[in-house]
Image (cartoon, rainbow, N blue to C red; front, side, top):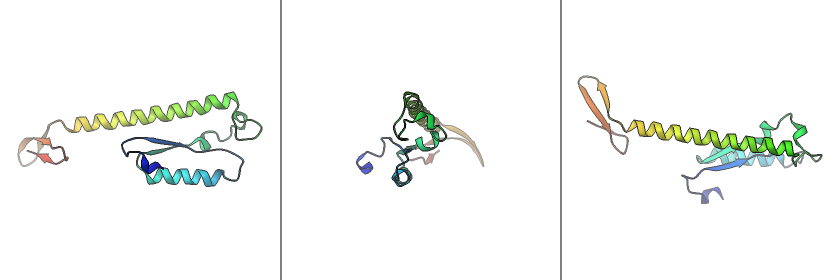
Length: 120
């Protein structure tokens, strides 16, 4: 289903923590999907929630209100980090299109072309 999402759109997959036997299989599949697609980010609830049984209701899967707050905190932090990374990459790309002075056998000004090649 991920292949239906345009590659320039971000996809976030959140793995699970549960006492059910499907936990490891599901988390492995989500990790594989994140590795297979450049636009997919795995949000690691399994690791984030480790050692916090108090966030979970008696069944070990569903969350108490305090667990819901931590879950939302984690997702928000993941989205903010992704936004900041994207903004930094965009700024770096914009800065890379600026002419730069080179020092070599001669002094000149280079202008990167749209394909990244440098034109003198």
